[in-house]
Picture 1: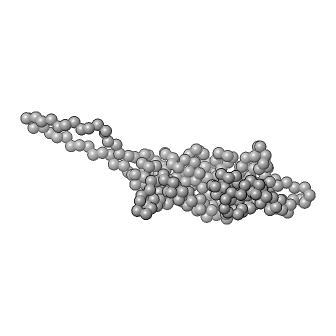
Picture 2: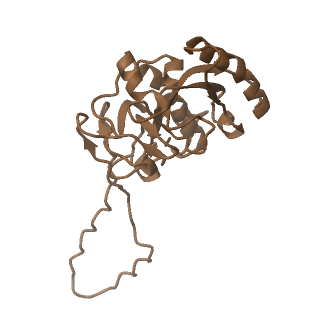
Picture 3: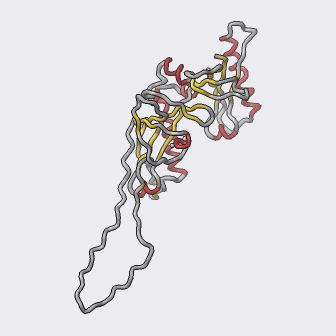
Length: 271
């Protein structure tokens, strides 16, 4: 989900009642019943495997028939962690699609992304890289699959993925990677034509700094704007060739984004 692999397996049985046996004076041979098919667990995903997935595939919690591609070819997703689901809570086995299991996987994948791409928290927030996660389907879980998979993707626009070549491991550890996969915009963040793109693509603005907001309840749009104004304006002034002629912008969370965990503002400058 913003991400389970392979063939579905399961057991099947007829819902019709068996016919009553008939008697005969002549001895007959009794056919040996065929045992029902046995479900087999889906193989665990491979760490560092790459996939060429669509946006719809990565925002789904499970995805069938995902085929790996070579990481030196164009791809949109790379696995950075494969772990085991812990769905035993106080002696009760939770379903793999329960909110508690899915939330735990989401938290783990999100928390581990920073180290996987070699970034600080701010560097990650100023990039287009995001974590997605996958778990087995209910049928696969019933067959014994107990894994979860964390992937990293590069987002593009509101609902797109950018193709990349090569491994994304530690890609933000150097300036070249941050310049390539930093978060840039096609216009100012408050413009109608604004769209987030990787900085390797054509752009006119760039996210350059992060302002942390006080934790707690959502403070409202006015308070978010007030918190952003001084630090973003000061940063723009310090980088301007003419301290009397400069532009700056900011991008802050709305109430829904706040609930999703974005409790910070991005400062933007022309680039």
